Every structure is written in structure tokens, then in C-alpha cells.
Image 1 (spheres, rainbow, N blue to C red):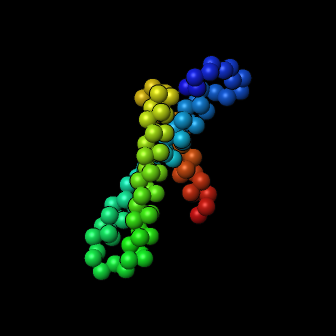
Image 2: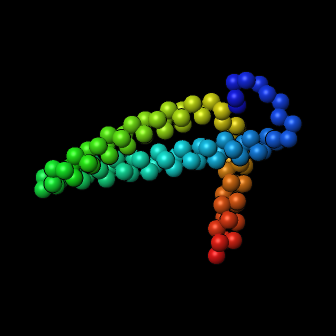
Image 3: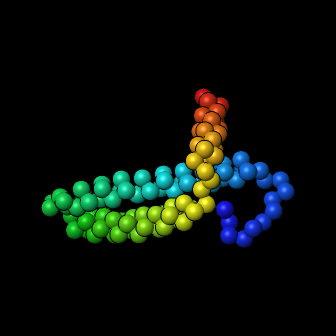
Length: 108
């Protein structure tokens, strides 16, 4: 939890857990997306026929994506210290997934 101890009068423990689970999920999604992009850019750069201008663009994207992945992993590592117990985190994830499923069902 936050380093400064605060009293929250309305925010429940479940809501705090849900917010942390949501943040972790967002970071893990970013991590996965960036890792896939890095793999794709590295594969593309193996093509010796790639035009120079496009190669430069892909190299720039690769560098930016590697930097962003490092940032995301730093955030993930810092977030580890704030995670609730495994049982509470699993409950928060279940609530989060239920909300996502309900939102998707409502859009249909």
C-alpha cells in the first residue's frame, strides 16, 4: 500500500485491491504488447531487402519500445510491494474479470 499511511473513510479494502489488480493488469498488458512488438520489429529487421528509410523507422520504433518496456517493468516491480495477499488479489481479479465480462455482454 502507499508509503504514507492514510485513513480512507469510504474506500474499502476490496476497492483498493481492485484498483491494484487493475493497475497490475494494465501493466502486464503493456508488458506483453511491447514484448510482442519487439519480437516483430527484430524479425522485420532480419530482412536484408528492407528499404533504408523504413529500416531506420523500425530501428527507432524498436529502441522506443525497448525503453517503454523497461519503464513498464520498473512499474511492475514497484507494484509488487503493494500487492495484497494472493487470496485477496485472486478475489480482486475475479471481480475485475466479472466487471469486464458484464461490460462486454452489455455491448452485445
